[in-house]
Length: 143
Ligand SMILES: Nc1nc2c(ncn2[C@@H]2O[C@H](COP(=O)(O)OP(=O)(O)OP(=O)(O)O)[C@@H](O)[C@H]2O)c(=O)[nH]1
Ligand SMILES: [Mg+2]
Image 1 (cartoon, rainbow, N blue to C red):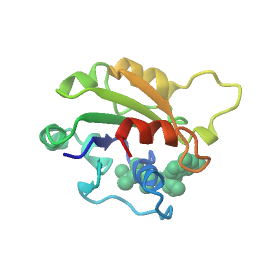
Image 2 (image 1 turned 120 degrees about the vertical axis):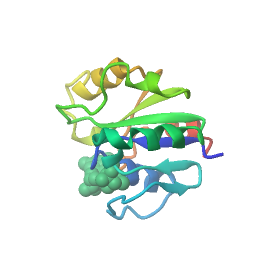
Image 3 (image 1 turned 180 degrees about the horizontal axis):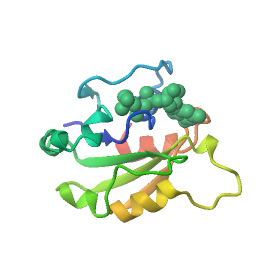
Image 4 (image 1 turned 135 degrees about the vertical axis):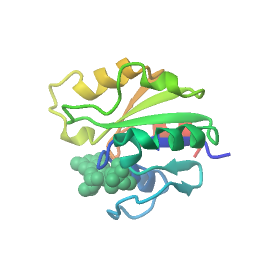
């Protein structure tokens, strides 16, 4: 059983993070469909942005141990409504991406507030570029 399903808006950095976690070259490639990659199921942002795909996410979540809600730290809008994580019967973790772009003085971000409101149990700050939070995430995913 794969460990986690990555869900989040298009362009938030799910695929790049997956590539970093597996020590692959960071090649931009738009995700077009559900992709089963080792311990991670990568999903297209559109599955979250279009509610008619929610059922596909729900069904697929049964295949994993945890659901990762992924959000770009510079986002000022969210695709995760409050309580969103309760939709799943799996524990939810929040992954904030691109932390290299966050102002050094910023203690928190809209993304972190939004993920907490969505109901994640734990937050991990990451940057696939600057190698932040990658080891922590590998530990969580058993990689
Ligand atoms: N600065 C910065 N940019 C990043 C980082 N990770 C990803 N990006 C950039 O963000 C863009 C989108 O990354 P993807 O990983 O393709 O995003 P995605 O969430 O898989 O998008 P979809 O497949 O459309 O759902 C790319 O141009 C990446 O280079 C990061 O850690 N820091
Ligand atoms: Mg992708």
